[in-house]
Length: 299
Image (cartoon, rainbow, N blue to C red):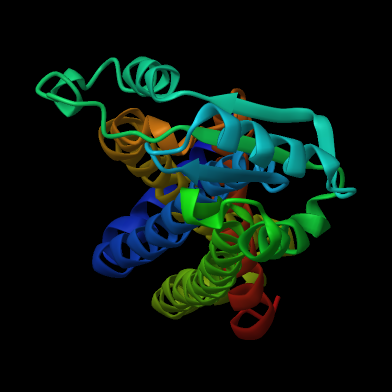
């Protein structure tokens, strides 16, 4: 117990003497781990959004003119069902009224989007699903060039191109985030190491006396190890608070406001992320201490 009190007292004394450096080290650890946590949350949000969007990769929306007659509509439907790439059971016709009802249901929390509509601006449409998502481009091209009554088809849209662009943006976001985190982690380790190095230099005479009286190597090292671990731990706790604040005040509100994008954070992710950030701070502090002790303290 006395030994633990001694180590704690020595650690606190060292931190107090090098307070500015110690605070700087904690701040860099907090920033690096905060960035890591936000990258993980952002990655999870966009990943879930892309997964929800990928469910629509094989879907094609075909919008019809309001002038389309029932005979023309039936001819277009028969053509779509006959395409070998299309699943005939998933060729669905949606009227203007059905489309408006679905729109109101989707945006029921934003009634200002539809309350003042005098006429229904939404078109009649077909939703077509291909047997293989890879055939979307083929079906789109065929419909645009070979479908009967092409003058009644106003637009043909699919989600595949948009999802591909979204995935490219997501990959770049992930790569930049990972590189940024790695760079800040290296800076954090080095800054913790510098604080330990300064502490070793400040106590060099005391360390020499301890060697002469027979103190063991680890008895001399432990206060410095604890100092690095303390800095890393405090930095990780600050990072956890920052990540939680950003999640509650920004990300949750963003998800709620843009609910039509179907972004979401996987339940239970924070239960894994918070201990991981805490462990990351411990590791950064330990690595910084180990580097400084191995290079600047000969015992």
